[in-house]
Length: 223
Image 1: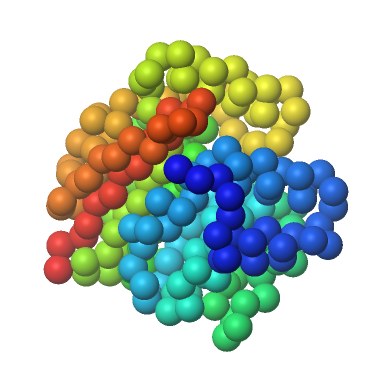
Image 2 (image 1 turned 90 degrees about the horizontal axis):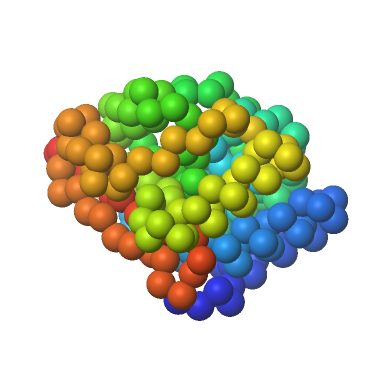
């Protein structure tokens, strides 16, 4: 799985050229460490997409530039990150927007896809499940709930990820979230999606040749 950015990735990363140096470095490290292209692969080619917990907005910026038929809204609780994201937002037709959101809330839909990339582990398990239920309820008929998070296996990758996240959240304070992480087995989380009324729930490992246990879950709303 190549880490080299494709054309849309280069455009998205280039949009941060005027951001503070630390933010530019962060989005580049984020691109190199997270498999964005296979997550974007499952999105519809047209429609309204919501990203919850978008941070600096790199995935939203990438998705909007990769698929001209998408209207993308990224939300995050961190106003400073949203300010950086908004500065990168100009896309033809105003198809990319960012807004500050409340923790655990889902902007009113309907959405053709709702995406969460490395967000859920920052919440306790009850809050994770409640957020997924709210996201599922906000989908348009046939809409997709796309969850990229960290799995609990292989154990060595999970341990390495926990160490890195502890540094990011507890020491460097790069990411806002609970001091305690709640990593959930993908199989259990898939059950939550099914219990929220989604169908055709698919699971896929994205960690080949990577040191983090990336995992993808996709569920579809009826209709």
